Each structure stands twice: as structure tokens, then as C-alpha cells.
Image 1 (cartoon, rainbow, N blue to C red):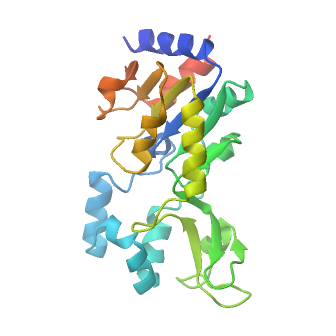
Image 2: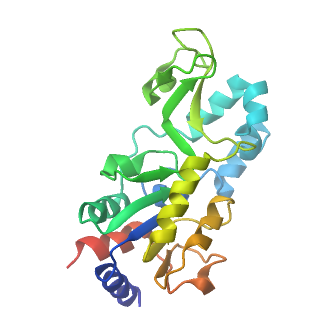
Image 3: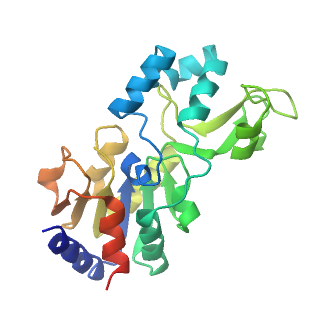
Length: 247
């Protein structure tokens, strides 16, 4: 049955000229990046920090307790050794073939770019971008990872260097959001993968799609399954890899 559905996916890709991919944490878990929202991730966080991930990653907590924030952030959101998996590589290949026009991602790990994708809308920012809150000086991931103290400080002015990621209580970057919406609106095929579609406003982006090739690839069911033209409950790396690379 899965092979049959992968065949349908292949045919859909062949007949499409403007494909957009919208992905979440499930795309990166296959690169061994754990989903901090998983039961296991939440349990470990509550056990160690006595607080929920949502609280630890909130703007309020960051401003009040930067040391605890960075301790949690470094250990749970940065995976510098992670490598792109078959899903990332398949999407980069589709862009190379000029079929895929954009990747819209909720992930902050930069693995799509590492795989070769160029047109990537990062809804929640990226761990690879960091900036001084005081003077705006920009820093890469290595600066934050290798900084001697818990809270990274700017070498120019001494201000706190924060990751360019969207924390809880902060709004999404409207220019990124509107670009993502524009791509989805233009798409003749939308593939959604590795996301439960439970986090808003990102999940609401699907509403911009008006075509008849909505594909959902997720290990478990989502609230949008009934609206989809094709639902595949399987590994996203396997499905996309087989659809793109297997003859």
C-alpha cells in the first residue's frame, strides 16, 4: 500500500510545475534531532528544570533568567553535528530540477540549506544566526556554542548575544510569513510533512493552498487528513527519498 501511494506521489510530482514543501520537527527527527515537544522531551525537561519547554523558551524567561535559558537551549535545540537526511536531500534535488519552488519550515536547524536548498522560509528563525541585542552585531552558531561563559556576550559592546529564533510570546517575522503564504498560494502542489499541524499561526498557512494536490506525509494522523488528496503515514525520509531518487 505504501509503495502504491509513493507511486501516486511520483505521478503528482511529474505533473506539477510549482511544488511547495511545508515541514515540521518530524523532518529533523530522522537526522537524530529530538522533538523537544515529544512526551520524552517534555518529561526530561520537567525532571531536570522543573519547568516546561514552553516556559524555558519564552521571551519572559529568557529576559529574566538568561543563564538557565542558554543552558537549556544549548542542550536541547543545538545539534551542530546533525546531517541532512533523505528528506532534505530529496527536496534539494527537486529544487535543482526546478519543480520545487520553496521549502517552508518550522525547524531552526538549517539542515535544508546544508542539503542544498536555496529558497527556504524559516518561520521560527535559525540557530545559525545570532545577534547582539544592544548593537546588532551578527554572530554564527560557533560563537554561541564555544563561548566560555553560559551567556554569550558581544565582543564589540558586551551586550547579550541572542539566537535569531522565535521564542514563545514573540511574533513570527511577518516578511517571512507573507513570503511563505505567497509561495503556498501559487503552488499547484503542496506537500506537508513531519508536522502535526497543531502549532499556529504556522499551521494556518495550509489555508492559503487552493489546489487539488495536497499531500500529507506524517507518521501519525493530523487534523487536516480529511482535506488531503493523498495521506501517507510513513517515514518522510523514506517516502520522499523513494519518490525522488528511485526509478
